[in-house]
Image (cartoon, rainbow, N blue to C red; front, side):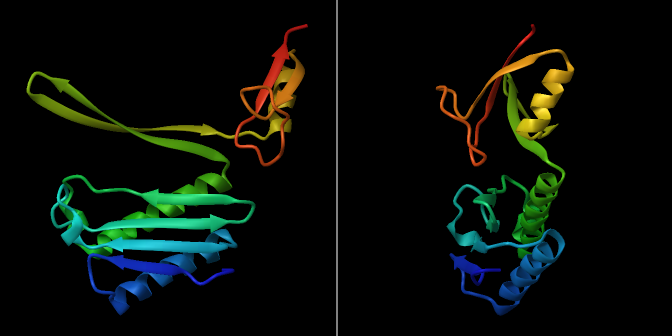
Length: 176
């Protein structure tokens, strides 16, 4: 790692055992997925959460090469397992590991949640949308193979030029 990991404790006193556990999780991620340029972990103690009671909240920010980041920030809602700091830590780093795995497999996954209300009943549903992310040349080849001619490659929705670092790319294609 280019810079030492920053581990902050909020609403609780720093605990060497928790600090060591966080450092082990970071080392495992770096060993498995390669170079991590920076890391910030915030461990929020249960005293600061009016809505979540006595639950811990762990936020993880990993800085990766080429200005790519992984953020895990989740406030537990009515899940008593987060009252155990070790469970909260393991869950946060499991989510970070999954995001890194998805990047390695070029998958994009959106975790979704919605609440369905019928009268006085509420039911929360969770699901994930997953799709494979293709590079610009891969997508252009697929369009051409399907019989389309690529007419433009744009870097934003306003017609700006494409750059390899762009967050957005738009391929315009037409059937000849």
